[in-house]
Image (cartoon, rainbow, N blue to C red):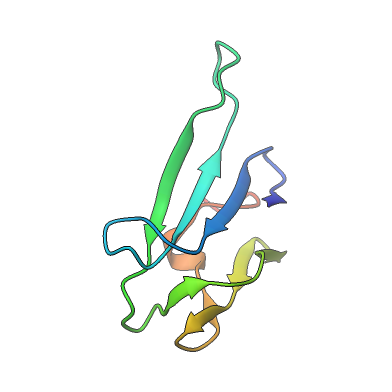
Length: 85
């Protein structure tokens, strides 16, 4: 998992999500102290690839990673991370 400047944690799963191709998820502490998990992206095997296999890295406010099926991808369009709104 990677932590952004605003304290959010992002991670990936190799399977699951709407198309069972893996996900990007976010965890952010709630006002009540809870730790809800939010689905950020479901991989479908198209241009976004399928089955993320590496952890995410944060570079200049954008999250990057790779998938087993498909090319390396930048998921900045799907995310609000590191101060980017």
